[in-house]
Length: 307
Image (cartoon, rainbow, N blue to C red):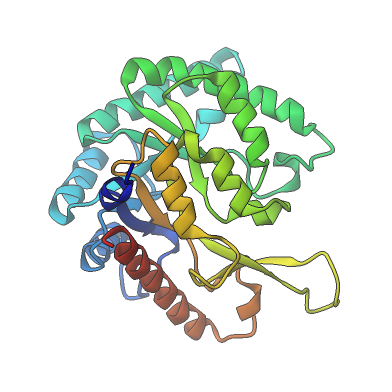
């Protein structure tokens, strides 16, 4: 079977909070600026990941941007999501908030919610010595099973990112245990390297569960203070790292039930912790370079899906 037709339906975009926005843009105008910029770059999606409440005003404002700029966002679950299986009043509130978010999704005409479990810290990863990784995964499994009951009734999908916390192999075990068509993966093509796993193994394992993505290339560099391991994970311009992004997209097209219209959302940049190779560069130059990286990624992805 030729999967080019599936790939041609995929939608390219970027992660909203990390795309460089000019200082002259007022905070209240940031969302519209990002949607306008998406449209200028011929993007059709965006990882919204901006403040959003399930109010009529927020729903109306976002729907207006979607319609005006022809953008289909990925949305986030409420912050309380990972307390769904905790029991008591906290879990009841989390359930109420998830249902409210699903109702907002219906009004917006959207169907994908996403989140990452960990917070880029050892205590919320498989390396934790306080709450063992397997115990965290059991709790995560229970949370996702609870969420699945709500999501199935609401016809909304939830995608959990491989978020620098557990390996793809561990996430596969969780997805298999939950066994719901409404629970799957927000595949980040680069995060495997951060937890000492091979990103090119990760996407092959997670491909059947993929609902949405973050597209990033990554590599490793030596720590400037020593000439041996451990290496430092860092962002790379698409095609210059170790991730075979084109094969990752083709693999997902073959194996995921959500390949048609899949969101290919760029998450990269030359600022922040994942770009230590640019630490000595002046801030204004790093920001300008980061914009170039985003725009280059987007252009390459658009060319790839239109091949």
